[in-house]
Image (tube, rainbow, N blue to C red):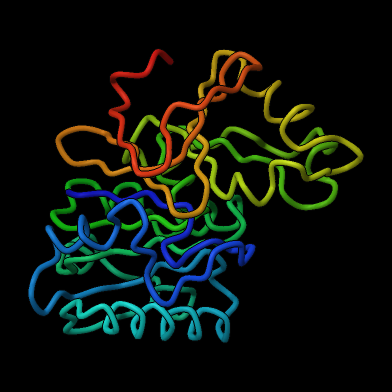
Length: 247
C-alpha cells in the first residue's frame, strides 16, 4: 500500500497560486508516477454520499485531470450512496483509491456505513487522500471544527475512529484558514491549539503532502502543532520523515 495524504492535489483552493491540472509542486506528480500502474483501475469514494451531482462532477474532474497528466487509466468509478454495497474483494480489485474532500464528520460516517476501515485493510495499491480524506485516514481522527456552531456545540465529536492507515493527524489548507474565525473564536489559536495538548498535528499548506511507503515522509511546507505551540518543520521543496520530528 502506497499512501499520498494531500491537502489539495490540484493546487491552492484559495487561488493564491495558479495550477493547471495536478499540482507538480514538491514533486507530487513525479512521486505518484513512480507507483502508478498501466491501465490502473481507479475509484473515488465521495465525502458526501448523497450529493450525487457534486460527486459525479468531482469524479469526472479528477478522471480528466489524471488523464491530462498521462496517467494510464482503465476505469474511474465512483462510490457514493448509489453504489455502496461492495465487498472487500471488489474493493481490492482497484489499483488506485481516492478519498474525496469535504466535511470530515459526514465523510467519516459514510466510511463507517460502508465498513471501509475493514475493507481497505491490506489494500495493495495507491491511496490518495484529499483534504477530509487525508484527515479521515488516521486511526483516531481529529475533526477540526469547520461549520458554524461546531466549535461551541458540546455534542460535536472532535475525536472519532478513522481508517487506521496512519497514526498521524493531518490538518489541510493552512495558508487559507490560518486566520479564520469560527463561532467568535480564532480557529487555530483558540480552538486547535487547545486541542493539541498531547495530540500532535501535522499541518499542510496546499501543495504539500505526506507520502507513506516504508516510511512517512512530508513533502513541502508544513508545521507541527503540539501542546499549544506551532513550529515550521519543513520548508517548501524540502522533505522530512515523521520519525525525525520530535512529536
